Image (cartoon, rainbow, N blue to C red; front, side, top):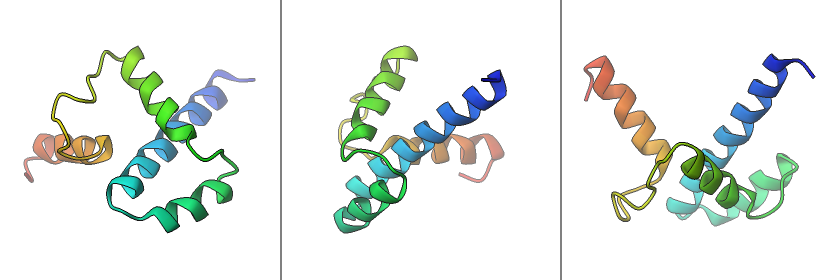
Length: 85
């Protein structure tokens, strides 16, 4: 498998996990139950995916308590860089 394909697949799994965490946080359980089978992924795959990401990148997912999902932190960081926050 080409390296670029591996990167795209890994990025896709991480993005899917970020979306799942957001859906869970937002209380959109039914949407999450529909989304995961559409992605052909098991029920709680995203929890392990985000845990692995956090461990590999030395990210403390509990540093902000229950402030929100990682996807919102990523968006906030992006907006701060762009000067829109």
